[in-house]
Length: 315
Length: 322
Image (cartoon, rainbow over all chains, first blue to last red; front, side, top):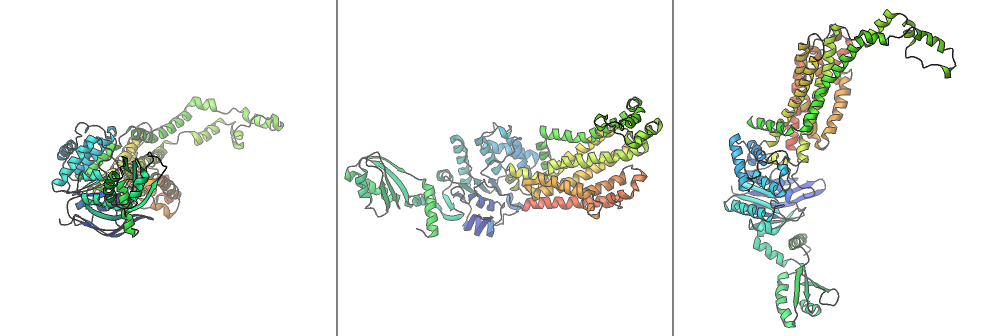
C-alpha cells in the first residue's frame, strides 16, 4: 500500500452548503491528525473516506480503492464517529459481537474478540451491562472498541477523546499511540490541538471545507506563533510600555483602556514570538513590573482565521 | 447466510419490548374479538326469550293510528317501524321471518363464506398488515434517528444484511400475530370446514406479511423521516380505496391478490364465487398467477428498498458539523 488516502480536487456540496471545497491531498500510510474548528468540514471529509458520501466533484481513494459501496475495503477500515448512536437495550459485549458477526467472524470467536477489545479499553467490568447504563466516557470507550475489534489496517476516529475523564483520556491516548507506533494507519479528527498532538505528530488543518495546511506539530506551533493575535498585558506603567511596543514593526494596534495599572494594555501583533522577545528587552529597560500577560483569543482558532485570510489573499 | 441469520436474530431480540408485545397482543385481538362479538350478537338474537321480550305488541299499530289524530306537540314518540312493519306487526310469524332475515344468525351453509371473509379482513388484511407496518416502515428511519446507521454501514454488506434482517423480523411479527389471532378466533366460532378456512388464512397471512413488509420497507427507504405517515397514506389510498375500485387499477394492489386467493382457497359458497359484482374484486386468474404476482412484487420492492438504503447518503455527521 503506497498511498493511504488520495483526494483529487474533491468538492462536496449539500444543497447550498459547501462541505468540502476543492481538496487535493495524498498521504502515505501513518498516523495523522485532522484539525479544524466546528463546522470546518472534518466530518464530511471522514464520511467521504468511509464511503458514506460520494464527492460532488473529484475522486476519493482509500488504500488504493474507491470507498463508496466498497464492501471489501470496509473489512480493513475501522470507524469511530463523533456521536454515540449505539443501541441502548443491549450490552456492549453483545453489540460488538454482533458487529463482528457482520464482519464475518464465527459466533464464538466474535464474542471472545469483543470481550478482548472491551478489555483493551478497560470496559471489562461493565461489558455485560446495557449500553443505556453506561456513562459518556464508557460509551466513548465502547465505540473505540467496536472500531478496533475487527483489527482494521486503517482507523478513522472523529473526536475520540471528547467526553472522557482524565484517566480515560490517558488510557485511550496511550492505546492510540501504541496503534500508530505499531505501524498501522490512523486519521484522528479533533478541534483540540493538544489532544491530537499526544497521539500523532503529523497534522492536516482544515477550515471552511478547505485544506489549509499540513505539517508536523512543531510546524503548527511555529505557525501559531506567527499568526496575528491579540495579547493583553497588565503592568505597572502601560503607557510607557505601549511607547516601546509601537516601535515593533509587527505591531498592528496598541490600545489602553483607562489610565491605571489595573487596566490592561491590548496589543495586536502579526508576530507573537517577536513581541515576546521584545518584551524581554523593553520591560527591564523601562523598569516596569509585569503583572500578567494573556492572549484574549483561542490560538488555534486564530491560526485557522489567519490561514483562511492567507488562502483568500487577504494577508 | 450466517450474517443474515445473525442479523435476523439480533433484530428480533431488539424488537422484543413491552410496547411491541402490547401492540402485538392488541393486533392479534382483532381476529379474535370481532368474530366472537359478531357470533355472540347472532346467538343473542337466536335466543327465544330475547325474541319474546322484544317482539312488538300489536297495539303499536293502534298507537300510531291514534297518535296521528293528535296535535303534533302531544303526539307520543313515533316508534321506529316503517309502515310495512306496523302493518305486518300483527302477524307474528311473518314478523319473525323478517327479523330473522335482518338480525338473526345467517344460514349455516353460508357460515364458511362469512367467516372466511371476516377472518380475512381482520387477520391478513388488518392485523397482519398493521403489525408489519409497525416493524417494517421505520426500518431505515429508526437507525438514522438513533444514529446507529453508521456502525452497520461501515461493515461489509452491512446495510443489505440489516435490511433483510429487519424484513424477516417484520414478517415474523406479522405472521405470528395474524395466525394466532385467526386460530384462536376460529376456535371460538362455530362453522363447518374450519380446518380449510384456517389453512387458507394461514396461507394468506404468510403472503400478506411477505408482500406488505417489502412494500412498507420500500416506502420507508424512500422517505425515512416520514415513513409511517407515507405507509399509512399508501395503505389508505392504494390498498383500501384503489384496491376496492371495480376497475383494472385494483389489480396493482396487494389486497386484490389476497382477496382473489381467498376466493380460490377458502370454502366460499358457489353463489358468492359466481357473483358478477365479486368478479371485479377478485378477477378470473388462477391462484398460481396471483402468487407469482405477489412474489414478483415482493422481490422488486425489497430489492429497491435495499438498494435505496445502500445508495442514499445518510451522512455520519453531528448536526451542524458538516
